Amino acid sequence: MGLLPLHPLFSHRFVSNSRPIKEWENHYIIELDAVGIHPEAIEINATDNELHISAKPTELESERTLLHQERISEGINQRFRFRNSIDVDLIEADLEHGLLRLLVPKKAARRIAVTLQSEGRIEHNETPETTVDV
Image (cartoon, rainbow, N blue to C red; front, side, top):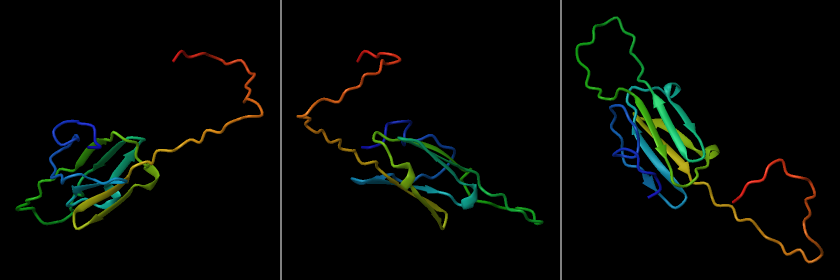
């Protein structure tokens, strides 16, 4: 599985009805209940292997008194940590009918080509500032 194990469902959360996180070879799909949340209120921050999603439900401005409400979501505050690097520039998010869906692409491993230098070696004559033992 591609997520590092955090607390029970791989994330930190307020009260929210989270749906399963699906993993494919090249990407993840994350779905979260976001009833009563406008797209402008959702904040998504990503680093190389971590995704943080937060939002607060929009308060309805009305002159009427609220008699009953069955909305259980108090907002979103979830952090996902992935085992592999994710491509933060290609993450897509959409909100439809109270469901926030994110497509999180995995960053492809980059193959580095090694060439054979028969005519000479790569020379680096500068003195390093520091030396690190590996």
